[in-house]
Length: 277
Image (cartoon, rainbow, N blue to C red; front, side):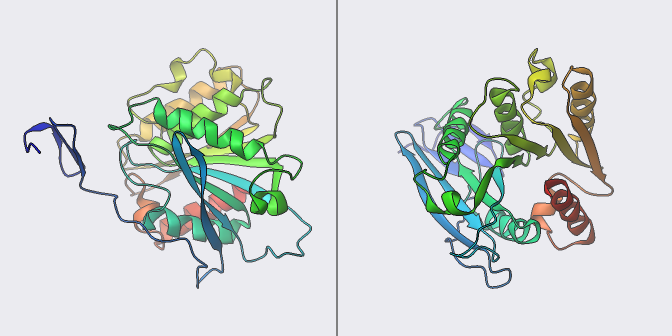
């Protein structure tokens, strides 16, 4: 085992010349559970073994075995620069417990393979495979009973933060307005698009497969202007939907994940809940 570094991206990640990867952030996980504060129940499952793609599912307290009214489905893609965090981290577990409870939705939090062990486009391909798996539950005959019983696949929302927002956007483009016949995409909300990629240069931008988009940015986030640029470009692309930008003053990138109970985070969560409903 060599300690010679190929890339030192501290305090985030170190990559050694022998191929070993040392993640310095975003490695902790928490088990699925019944959240004592919200009553939201979660469980983990494997979507694919080759490649290994997992997810954490969430259902609100309102769901019971006797439930007849199905709820909107949120598909969430976590952030972390494509190389950190997971669907099982305390950050995302706690965030989705709160969001699922307040919005009264079912959620699938996708755990895609991370770089650099699995270079892009692995994250996109895994996320697409997860969406096709979700789509297999149309008609209530899919492999996961929670989705069969509780999820309304006519009301599906994509969301993500940071790198996950970029994934959410790209999944919306893959669905497109004409080529997706499995479920109806109700909307998409995201943080600023990732700086490595530029969705506005995509000639298919106007084919985004949803009717409305909410872009959430923070005033002190260096990606804020890209979020605004994305929204303006979407309006000019020929896309027939409605895009809205929510800017939070005096805050940094993904502040709502790390200080979820502050006044601005609560206001942002309320906006997102309103958007989904």
